[in-house]
Image (tube, rainbow, N blue to C red):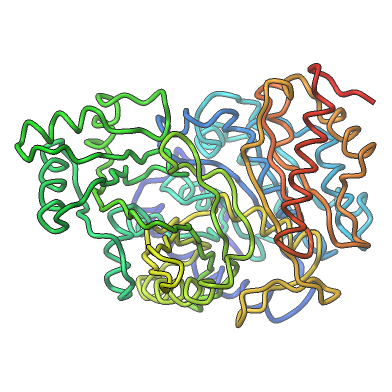
Length: 513
C-alpha cells in the first residue's frame, strides 16, 4: 500500500530529500511499462510553471499564458486509458480546449475531456505557478484526487527547481524532470564545463563570474587570448531566450578605465535594461564572458534530446533558431528540421553532450544551442556549443504540436520527421506574433478568422497552422503559431500567408468578413 503523501507543514527538508529519492525508481518502472506496452493506464500531472528568475520573467509579456504552451501534451490522451491533470494560474477558455480536442484524431472529444482534470489557482500575480500551488493545500488535495492510481502517475513540469521537487513529494509521485540538485549543469557556466567534458568545441571565454571586477578581468583575459577581438558576449547564468545577454564592444584603448567605460555602454537584448540593474543580476546569479563569433555566415541551430530514467540518450529533434531583438540575441522562433548542411553534426554533438549529462544522473528533456559559422561559402561550417537548457523551451512545444497533429515520428539517422502516412514534414514556429491591432481579439474571434480563411490544420493534407498562447491575445495582442507543411519553402509561404490574413482581419482593430 502506498503511503499518503505528507502536507507541506509536516515536511522537513531532510524528509523531502529522502522521499524524493524514494520516488525516483517508480518513474523508471512506469517508464519501462509505458514504453513497452501500448495503451497502459497512467496519469500525467502537468504543472507548466515557468519557475525562473522573476526579474528576467517580468521581461516576458503575458508570462502566465505561456502555461498554455504545454496543452500540446494533450496528445497523451490519445491513449484511451490515460488521464491527465493540468493546472494553470488562470482559467483556460473553454474554446481553447475545444480547439485542441478537435485534433485528437480517432478519439471523441467528450471521451478525452472526461479523462482531463483541469484545475486553476485563480492567481494572476507575476510569480511561478508552483509557488501558487504550494500556498494552496486544498488545490494540492484536488490534484491528488485527480490521480487515479498513484503508482502509475508522474509529474511533468516546464523546468525543475526545489519548488517542483517539493510539489512532487507532496503529491507522492515522481518528477519526470531533472533532479534540482543537478540544475547547475544547465546554467551558462555549467554548460561550458559540460561541453569541455564532452569534447565539443565552444567559444573562448570564462565562467563563474560574479562581480564587475570579475567581468572586467574576464574581458581583459579574453583580449589577451584573442588578439584583435572586437566584441564579447556577457550572459547571465539563469537567463533564458537570450534576454539576459549583452554585447560588449572592445574600446581602442586597453587600460582598466577604457574597459570600465565600455562596460557601461554594453548593448542589451531588452531595451528597458540598465547597466546598474544588469550588473546587480550578475552579482546575484553569476554568469559568463565569451567571445562573440564574427563569421560572415552564421546560423544558430539547436538539438533537442531526452535522457530516460535508465540513462538512454534519445534524439528528439533539431531546429534552426530565428533570433532578433536589438542585439540579435533574442529567441523569436524556429524552423524544423535544422539545415541539411550541418544537421547531422549538430545531432552528434548533442548526443555526446547528452552522454555526459546522463553520466551525471540527469533525467530530463533538454536542448543544446549551437552556433555554426564560416567566413566564405566554400568553407565547411564550424560548429560551437553555446548553452544547455535543462528544461522545456521554445522549441519543445512546436515539436509536440507536430507529433500531436501527424502521429508521426523522427528518423533518428537522418533527423527528418515522417508523418504516419510517410510524408516528410517541416514547420516554422514562433511565440512572438504581436500587434496592437490584435489586442481585444477573443478566442472565439480568432477561431472565426481561422475558419473563414481556411487556416485550420487539415489531417487530409497534413498541413496547416496550429495556434497557441491564445489566452494572451486579447490583453497583450500576442499569439504563437506553428505552420506545418511538406518543405521549408511551403512552411514559409504558409507562415507569410497567415500573417497577411491576420493583418488584414485586424486592420481596423477588429476582424472583418
